[in-house]
Length: 193
Image (cartoon, rainbow, N blue to C red):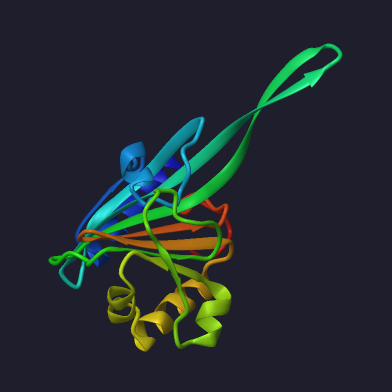
């Protein structure tokens, strides 16, 4: 598995991603993951398979992330501590040249975790409103960013990824969290890549 990542995936990504860099042993930091403002803090944090580069001149970084919550069970024989995984998937951070006006969240599940004055926004796409909840501190900016073409792209991305997906537009960054309970770059023998 390690050889596969170091030799095959590294060369593929460097070939297909502008300034592509892949490090299977490192990942995004906790502060980078929690900057999404829709992924809650974990009792146990692990990230790996760091990937960065640029697509169409837009820089990005990403990694697999596993987040676990600590549970304590009290029994007649004492206590038992165990951990439950609530996020296992990929987190992406895209850097744009201009800042978004206000804070915008498009979430399949949950709510923004920071306390700000949000409005829950209904957009013109009925299908989009069924699939996602949209929160923004600036309604005009939300309609400016979420054009019909862009909403269609977000719906397509959601359909290609099982599990739950969330997007946040904060300052000059777009954060994407895909909680699909998959470890992206693990080798599955005898299956197509």
